Image 1 (tube, rainbow, N blue to C red):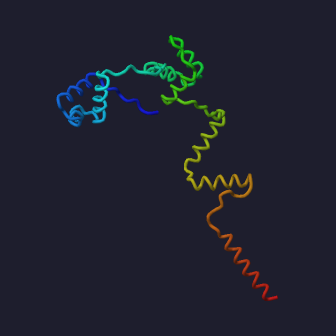
Image 2 (image 1 turned 120 degrees about the vertical axis):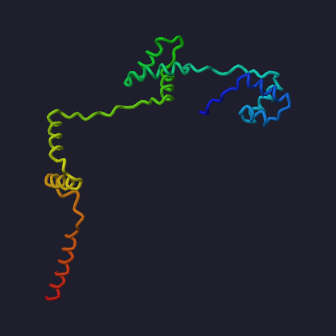
Image 3 (image 1 turned 90 degrees about the vertical axis):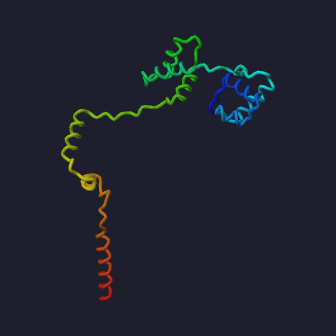
Length: 190
């Protein structure tokens, strides 16, 4: 959505027309008033066509929620972030003459940065287990990352099978190669 442009006040437009009629060039008027040259040109052309500098009345439907109503809505939602959209709409409409739909409230909240979120379920830990975890953590504060992996692997491996994180040393592979060479020597003797 494009940003809404500000309208020049009637006073500034009158000054533009007066400066032009007194003989100033467009660039001089623009630099004096700090307005783009194209805007100055548009004001002068409009004055020549209509004979006045007043702006036409705004066309189109007005917004249902002005800035003040949006602030009220945001304040209401901020006070209770878990309020359902239907309830927020109902309480917002209680003090208004013109009622707004749930979709209008949803759109306004979205534009203000409030989106629907599903709360992630929190894992509940019983008090007994919480104390056990805390005790275990205090006992093992001195552990490094490597020790933790090795310790966990030895426990996991003893319960569930082989070590999940083997050591980086590949000494076992070298021993297998030596055994293969020895087998070849035995074959020659026979």
